[in-house]
Length: 184
Image 1 (cartoon, rainbow, N blue to C red):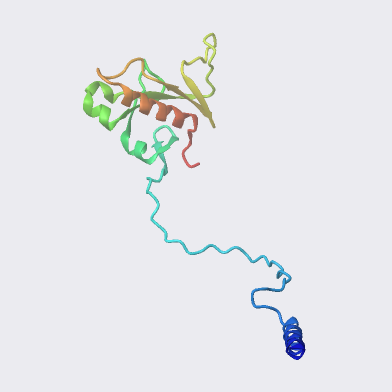
Image 2: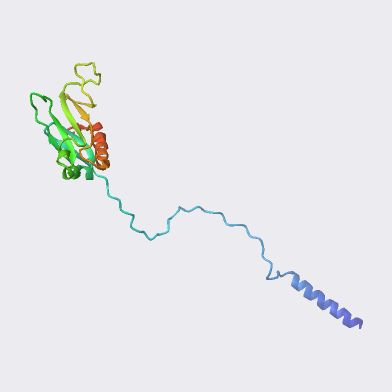
């Protein structure tokens, strides 16, 4: 029995020594992580959908050739706003222009003259001082060689909702502030 025990011990020792040089499959050796290399960002292709369309606001002008100036307005307003030149008379020696809109004109004959505003052309400079001899009521825009005076109407040209009047008065007044000489 001593022999069996001695042989078993030797076999166990040989198996043990033979197995010590090997690593079990379940263990992994730690590895050094690879350096991180930054690559330029690329955007993956994305299916594009058409963007919602909004009408482009094109800068147009209402050109008042008879008086030598133009007023910037958006395209839809330029197609809607109308004007009529005032006749220079003994009682009204200052040339001017009355503004309205196609829609207002169709609502009432009273809307044809100055329903959203009037602009007068005055030689030289105009004063906002009521005591000055060059006084004219209204908003003043100096251009080269003359002044423009903008006045809004005293009352709506028709009965009913006057939101259309107010909308175009505001467009005309904003345009007036940015009026320029023709050719600029």
